[in-house]
Amino acid sequence: MNAGSIINNIKSYIDNVGGSYSEWYVGISKDARYRLFVEHSVDENSDNWIYRTAFNSEIARQVEKYFLDIIGTDGGTGGGDDSTNMVYAYKKNSHTNP
Image (cartoon, rainbow, N blue to C red; front, side, top):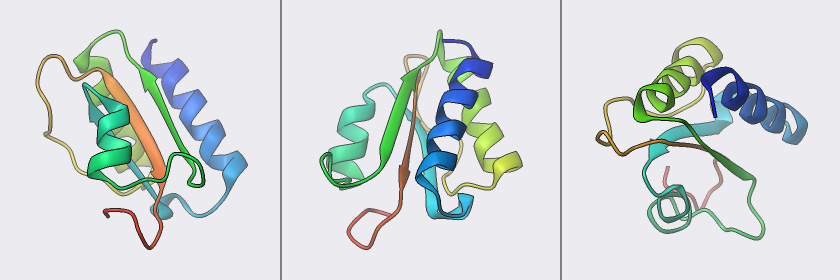
């Protein structure tokens, strides 16, 4: 997907679920499911989460930067490598990391 499509998909999901943008974490990964459900401890069945696959890592990084710098979600830049093409988001909870 291109950057605009991913931004629209994820932003619409966040807006529909609700909560302030700072309650959401956005990141990139080459394996979003592992990152979400293992490393961040998101509950696949009861938490709010979404991910989309970008055409390449450059687009994934642009989307991540948009959510962090413009929208104000939690997260950090600089992770991954050239194969990192997935953008994920989840609503933080007491059991998630962070």
